[in-house]
Length: 325
Image (tube, rainbow, N blue to C red):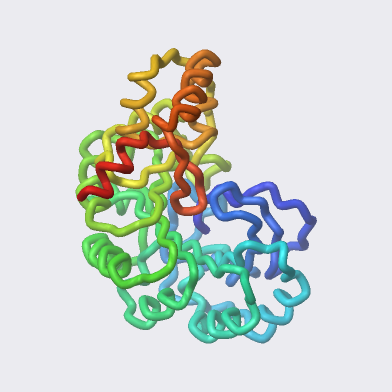
């Protein structure tokens, strides 16, 4: 299962229930989850950070729930307050063998609700899966590492999954997909948080056309004895990426307020290098710096811009430069 921030379920659910939520997700809105492997973990990765118990990887599902049952359960819970129907799993949702048929059925009944899948990206190498995901309104692809050694250590993939093939397909998908594409990188201390691995990720991410790139870390008890990194470390890693990339720090685990002082020039320079959300500002700026930011907003030197469902603070000059290119 993908380690995401879709937490704080506000209804009780029975074990093995297909539908869970709705969940108020800061990144995706009010989400109704659909578990495509409700009875057992079935995944082609055995990630070190997974919140589920360790289990041998598989190439396909052996315990399969029917499309009819999924749709029947979904219609009991779907209403106009739901922003997204989120396809996930106790494992990897693209292993579900009837995914194409299911998405066709979802598109018939969703009305204004968006469809979203949370996937580890590996099955994009399968052309049928590739084409199926093009039918979704939103896709979130995980990409924790791009070097062979680190990828195998952190994601522990099923045999014959090659990260070079996966990266190639992620780039290809990003160039043809018409919906909202999100990339998630989850950092594990001592594995993919090195400057070397970040630079390799940076090179790849510059070739991916994503609406937003979410940087996160472990925020649930992991399957193996590994630990995450702090918000401060995530912020430092964010600064290593190309400024043009739509980087967003998604995780708030270990997010201790930094409360640093920034003058007006420093605020503009910081936002020019890396646009920040209000949550980021609350953690990084002291009260006087926040007042300076408000002043810059009033003077239209800083503006707010929505990027991939989130609102960011960016310099007005930054917008003008991009428009002139």
